[in-house]
Structure formats: C-alpha cells, structure tokens
Length: 427
Length: 143
Image (cartoon, rainbow over all chains, first blue to last red; front, side):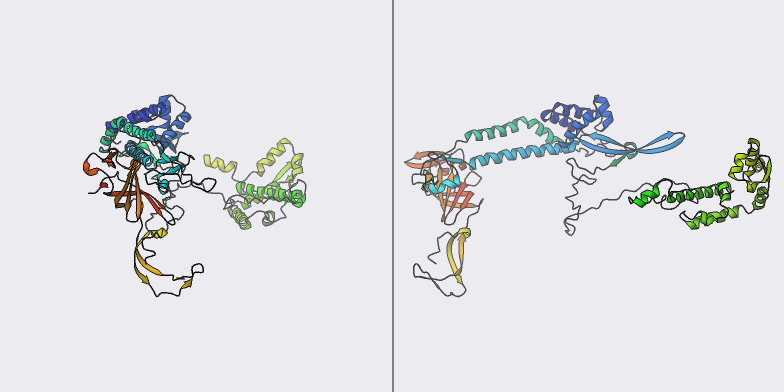
C-alpha cells in the first residue's frame, strides 16, 4: 500500500477537530488508525456501533468530502459437500482522501476571504442614503440628480401631489457593518494561520490519491465502480457526472466535448446445462395458453367436459410413450388402444416429427428382442385358475387374479433385459 | 451639427463631434407645430460613452463633505467619501474645502486633475449619472 506522509494525517486530524462535530472526529481517527483503509464491518466491530447507524454518519462525512467509499469485489472460495464454489462478495471500504482534503481546505479559505473582501467593498460602494423628511432610501447613484450648490443633496422623491419632496438627504450609518466585515477578516487571518501553514506544507508533499496505490488487486479485490455520485447524480467509473459528458448525445457533434462510451462488462459464462432428453422441446417448456375469460373456455376447463376428457387422453398417451421409451415395452393402456397407431395416439403432442422419431428409435432398438418379445406375449398366465395368453390379459382380469397369479403375471410382463441380463453382468 | 454636438444621445452616449453626413440629403418633412422643415439625416460622429469599470481622467469641480464632483468632458462624476482612501480627511484649508491626504501632493481641491474608475452608471433618456472611486492603485490626483 502507498505510504502516507505523517504531516498529512496530522493535518486531517486537526482539521476535523477544528470544524466538524465529535462523531466525525471519532470515525476519522478510527479509519486513520487502520492504515486509512478499513471495511465497513470491521469499523463497526471496532467502534462497537451498529453498522446502519455508523453508515449514516459516514454518508454525512462523504458529503462533506471527508470520507470516500470504495466498493471492492473479492472472490471467496468455499467448499460445500466436497465441491468447491467460488462466490463474488462485495465489500464497502472507507478511507480518508487526504490529498483532496488539503486542496479543499485551501480553496475554501481562499473563497471565504474573497467573499468577505467583496462584501466589505460592496458595503462601502452601496452606501444607502435616507431622506430626513419622507424616509425614502436611495443609493448614491440616485441622489446625484438632487445635488445643491452647497454640496448637499435633496430628495427627488415625488409625493402624492406629484411634487418633489425636497427634504435633506443624509447617509445611513453602516460603520457597524464595515467593522464586522473587518473583524471577520482579521479573525480568519489570525485563527487559521496555523492550519494554513500546515496545508501549505502538505501541498508540497506527495500524498497518494488512493491508499491502495500499488497494492495487489488479488488481495484487496477488484474495484467496483459506483454508478451514483455522492449527491445522487449518475456518474461513470471516475466519478464524473455523465450529464456533463453528454451521456444522452448532447455535444455529440461538438469536437470540444469528449464523449466516452462505457465499456461493457464481460458476462460470465452460463452454467453448464446437461444434455437434454430427446423429448425436451427447444425454446423452453410448453407454451401456456393465453387465459381466455370467455364462457366457452371456462366451460372447457371444468372437469367432466369433452375438452377435459380429450386432455386426459393426451396426457395418458404421452405417459405411455414415455414408459415405452424407458422400458421398451407397451403399457396395458397401449394394448387397450392397440388399434390406434402411434401417430394417432400422440396427435395432440407438439413436434409430431419427434414422436415419429421416438417410435422409430424404439423400433430400431427392439429389433433384436422383437422375436423374444413375441414369444413372451404368447406365454400363458393363470387368471382365477384359467390359463390365458399374456397378450389377452386385461385390467379386469388382473383384479380377478390371486396374489400368486399376479406375481407370476408381473414377472412375465417385465422387460427382456431384466433379471437374466443383470445376472450376466454381475457374473 | 450644432444641434446635436454636445448632447446626450441615449445608448450611444454623448455626441462629441459630427464627422460627416452619410448619403444625400433626403426630402424634408414639415413640422406642423413650428412650421420648420425637418431633415432626417444619418451621420457619423465621435461619441463618448462611459462604461462601468472604465478608468478616466477628470477635473474636480466641487468638493463637499460627502465627496467631490469631477467632470470628464460632458460627464459629471461623483466620488463618495467611502470611495476615497481612509487616510484622507475633509478639511477647510484657506477657506477652501479640501480632501487632505497624507502628503500635500495628494490633496484634492477644486480644479485639480484626478484619475478615477467608474463604479456605477445610470443612463437615462436625457442624462447620465456616474459614480467613481479613487481607492484602487494608481488612482487619485495626477499633477
């Protein structure tokens, strides 16, 4: 970190004690003690103050140009459940702008002395004159028209009869104001002499503009530029008011106005998305129908209507297709609808081509086991003591089966690559 | 030319001297009240117009306890005692009102030359009033 001259630190401590309230003094001393760069949380912990309460005072100091806020983004690596996660954490740091304080103090003192001199001169030059008769007030320039040969001035104010007043004009006593101006001027000269000498000495020293000059960004984090200035105006990274720079195109064609376009931030890569299944549609999920408040739509949505039945059929066909893909066999409901083709069953699904492809893939996959499947379908199962073909078993027959009969039936209805093949793998 | 020279022409200031008449003399218009013929003329002239902050050389015409009057040609300027350096005081010397300074060559009496700076101006239709100061450096009595 940059080395700060001790004289500058001492000047800042004296300055804040001379002109600002005690809470400013406490906070400034605390920040300066921490190498002039401390995080908001650390500062609140050291001073045993509530962070919110402390921030109110720090913002007031920021408005008075006694404190600056620096937002830093640091990468923090955490290990959770054995996985390494990197998080970006923003932290507020506070520091005292010592170089700016010296300049600001010298400018303010110069400005105050200049204003006092102007006031002193204006009080003398704008001497007021008052009429002893009518009480009208005049400036010097206004009484010249009523000058008399003896050097006195008479009032030229018109009365109700449209006649000049004619009263003698005397000047208003403003010696008290002039004395007050001179007293203030002398007070500034005497009482600020020490501070002015110290400021003059500090102005010749090399004070770093930022306490982190030369510091490692990995340690302290990346600077996050503020987009809002101290008084609510929109600013760029250097704190310059964007409106002055022609943010909205003012001065675009003016060669004297420099318009700087902001550099776009690099976006982080999107998170890795695993390979999508074949039935996943591109562009998001199913498109939701726009809600229609018409009576027909409301009727359609109620259960028991023809439209709701059709929707249930669609869902059922979709489920059958899903199971077939997973297990490679037809579900009982598919057997019940065996007369329907695969395309007709999936007529309400989006992406009809995909469904065809899925079916085609299934057919390709099951070519080898097709014959075995046929053999299986011809197997006989017992239903309430009667032997029936496996392919002819319906849901009602399943209910009539005993527990043993159902277990045998269930074992036969499993896919080909079930028990035997698994055993082969483990052998 | 004799009519306008030495008069105050409003925003142009005082007309000091007419140089030449521009263009041909137009047709006259009769003034119903006086019966005179009036010729509207355009002319070039040397004018004198004071400005605020301008430094002028003047001649003191009257000294009073409130300050002194000085003339810069056709312009009359008043310098208030607040615009006179604080080390000068109003006194009667040889029955003559004087603003006496620290040295004899700084005394301001009637008919002396004074360099002053105009600090206030009031321009009206027919006249112009001005106030000045001699407090700044290089101002005050000249000879």
